[in-house]
Length: 119
Image 1 (tube, rainbow, N blue to C red):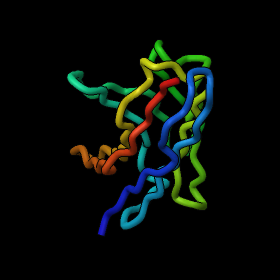
Image 2 (spheres, rainbow, N blue to C red):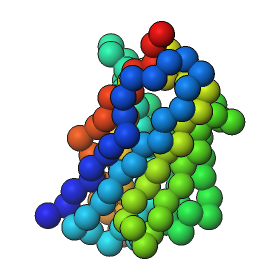
Image 3 (cartoon, rainbow, N blue to C red):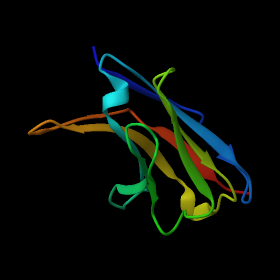
Image 4 (cartoon, one colour):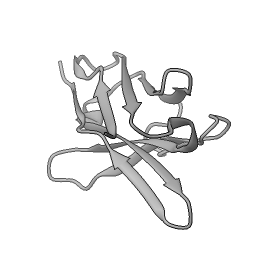
């Protein structure tokens, strides 16, 4: 059974930090590129950060560059999102996604974790 379980969300003041985790099971984690997405109320889901299978390459949305860092631990089947200097506009539900392309695309989504940035 495939599972992606996000954790680490919560309420934080502007300027604060949070570290999200996404624990994977039920599929060969190290063979999947991992990404974090977010969706704010009334907005479309957007890509926040992505990391390749071995972690050698990362990519970020312009809005989070220099503040967020994605990483992964293939031994623990977990991907992380370190979020610093959080702002109210970072408020959203954050989702992790696993994707592999093997002639066709396979992807899995987590259930999401709420991040609220407010004073």
